[in-house]
Amino acid sequence: MTSLSIYDENASVLSFDISSYQDLVSKLGEIGVEFERWNANIPLAEDATPDIVLNAYQKDIERINQRYGFKSVDVVSLYPSHPQRVEFREKFLAEHTHSDFEVRFFVEGQALFYLHVGNLVYLVLCEQGDLISVPANTPHWFDMGESPDFKAIRFFSTPDGWVANFTGEEIARKFPSFDGYRLKLSSN
Image 1 (cartoon, rainbow, N blue to C red):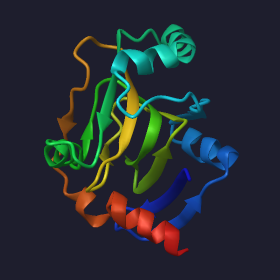
Image 2 (cartoon, helix red, strand yellow; image 1 turned 120 degrees about the horizontal axis):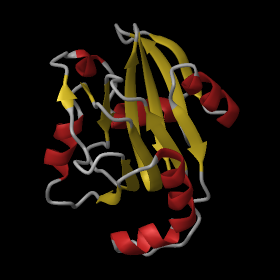
Image 3 (cartoon, rainbow, N blue to C red; image 1 turned 180 degrees about the vertical axis):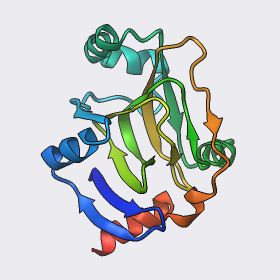
Image 4 (cartoon, rainbow, N blue to C red; image 1 turned 180 degrees about the horizontal axis):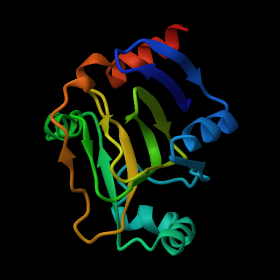
């Protein structure tokens, strides 16, 4: 289930497991993050190619492309046996920013965004059907877990695609990993 938790910079929990859609939209909207849900119940084979995935969501993709003027769209798919899963995970675990906003739609699976805004860190567990838009220059990081299993559509307004500016801060090490966060959610 999609969940939002808010921590202070020292990793003390302020609000845990906000899961009502309206509360998610409201809390994330306060920090400029857009969040919406799409119908992700289009049956796709596990080995669906990026073209098949993009065709399945073409109507929603066109709508959001018209709204934001994206220059490129692609599909990222990671699974537990992916040969580069460790490398890909490590790439996103350090706090970074982008000069462009970051938009992701989860076709399948789950992953965790960490948004560092002011002296707060927002943990957003995204799952199938969730679309999240992180504002430009927002410090954040991303964890897909030790056994990643997700498929997401990525939107870019520049032809360069994903370009990170790493902050050099060690804040990400203070917070629960994707796997630790999911475990904490299931125990509450």
